[in-house]
Length: 182
Length: 301
Image (cartoon, rainbow over all chains, first blue to last red; front, side, top):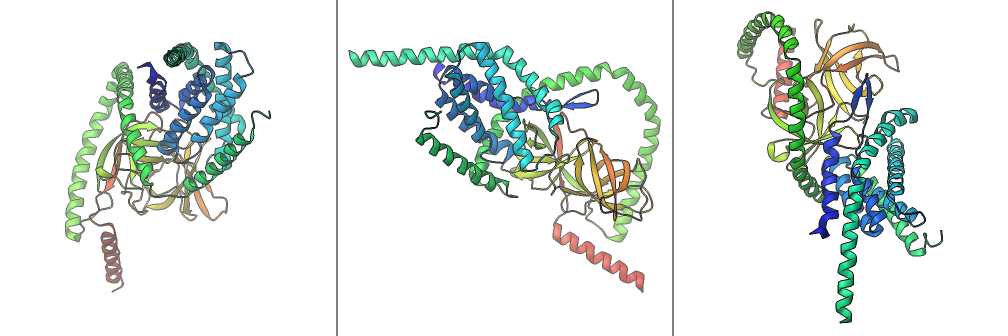
């Protein structure tokens, strides 16, 4: 059962993102603040850090493709960027100490990078013409605040679930090995 | 570094980039139709998404209800004040409507650009990254939705259908930055209708731009802008918004007006797709043209 828990969580997060997207943009004092939920990306980076970078990249490719086709009709954007973020995370995590604080920080940094790459991409294909300072204030900042809150609430739970899955995998592997030796 | 970029990985990365560029350039073309695999993915994801958006709308509905309950007293006072006015207006509308019907009968005109069949739809998702202004509805081709149909809420026009699959449709909102997005519109008030095109959206003012208005025509702030029904399959008379400022366009040849949209683009959940009730678009148009010619000839003689 726990074997399918990681893809299942990813699927639920994928469907939850647009639901939270319905509440945005937020209007405060006549200013609009865009909050972009990046639950799936953050989960994928956690999977990279605590479980397996290759597996995270495969999930990233799959859900990125769904995202591209269903929402933005530009195929290849998310399905490239999700695995890329996992790749970078996997590379960095090899050289740093692996704890929850570092994982959270890394996840937030990569989420910000992800937002920024998307901003550059959409500026290049001239779909949007937003000056950089407005992008920072009305998009990146509220997005990062909201996503940090989400991660502060659920980061620990993510870690527990992923580590539980990891232990199970190790056990089943060693079981197989034992049987082989017997 | 050398381990990170070993030969195999480098080749994979390069291949990835090439495929990416090819796919992006393929999908950035202006496509009216979606390919078959995309349709399957869209319909499947749409079905899953409906499961999640249902409860979400339920929750926001509760908040809305509480909100409106708190405002009940104030609203009630306001509405009582408007009630008498309403009765008079309604009587007038009924009168005008029956008169209009009679006149139409005399002229023998059956089809009207104003008539449309409303298709009720629910918003199942809004593009979460919000760079493009797109929403996804739970009605598709099997419910009679076609590309370019008008989408509105009770308050006014919000967009038009961009892509349709069997059971979902993607809507591009009028607040998009897409330069190819046009809605033919007219300004109400004054002797005759003033025609123009809604082209573009000012993100800072959060207002639409009404362009290509004849420079001779005087416009006033506060005049209503509605769809003209001349640009294809939009019905006539959907409220778009209200003029807030009039100026000259960049070439100085035509006028440009800023239009404050009547509809609110945030927190959309239930929308109406307007399926124009023309029996046969081309035929009706040619009939209308023939009628106009006949009328012109009569005038001359």
